[in-house]
Image (tube, rainbow, N blue to C red; front, side):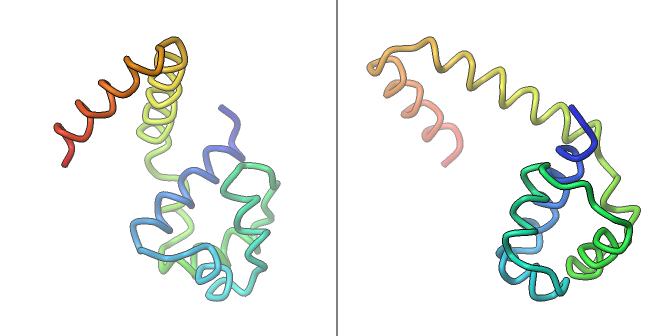
Length: 106
């Protein structure tokens, strides 16, 4: 996974942990909401200035944007594996899997 995607995933994680919308983060960071969206999708090469604005908007230190890449990467890879597995299942199987997941997680 490339660094832009890793940073984007980390920013999204922190934003959701803080229960902020992309619009709210954009406002706090003095950036445009579409910019935040493209950052979270890993489509932007961020400048240090933009990273600092986002960190400030999230109320974290810049170094926090780089923490937990290993955890994030493992989570992303596992989610991709699960998605790939589910793509091979028919509708009946998917409905059963959904019920099991809801039972376990709710």
